[in-house]
Image 1 (cartoon, rainbow, N blue to C red):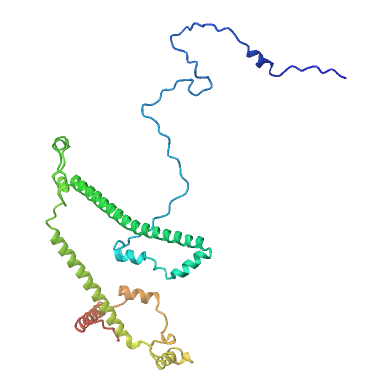
Image 2: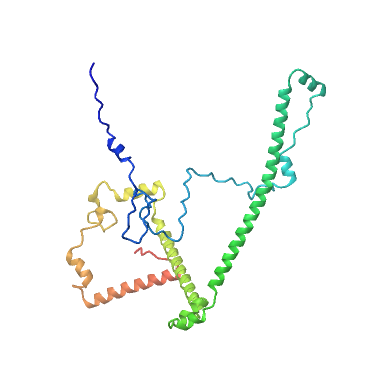
Length: 319
């Protein structure tokens, strides 16, 4: 049989440290008292100055959210605190119609548990009716208190704001404020005075009326021009056929040698460059012809304008 030799323990060093040692008084070289109660691994081993105001623990975060409370007392709903509404909402149960003899037979037949359960349900229903009535009254009273408090708070804030807005300037502010033009000081009192406001507004109204009249005159002139040109409009199938026969001819040679007309085949040769220049510069014409032609054209334009003014509409030149 083999002899087993005991191995040295891994915690021999720890066992050696447990031995008692004689206590010795150590003399400190400092006058600061040594804190022996707090271990080095403690966070309080090194003193850290704390603020005078205590730190309260933060409010714990609650998961989820509360639903929006239901509006019970709406503007269109009736008054839910009247006895009529409460009686209609929580009516009392009808009296039991079971004969006494039948109930006695039920009790004798072993229905005591069922009767007890019915009584328990009846008590619960009575408690629910009472709670509903009291809750309606209390909620209505709380709503009125809340509305009164809100109205009072709003009125107080409005009064404070009005008092701050219309408060007069303090004497120290007036004495220490820089110089401000007189017209800027009136802003605190009210709007800047404008003595010519009514005259300017009347002038603007007159301008607007003139613009409307001009726009109306243009519309009437356009409408009259449309009416004058309407006699040449093609409105029937016969007019369309007549215009097609006049414009689209079968033998264009028949227009040769005749006076220029409206047809594309009867328009004549195009104007040359010299003719176009002479029409603008009046070259190649005598002074008498130029003056007579210019005077005749001017008289025609004047007569046309006068006739248009007299008739109240535009006149189309037909000749």
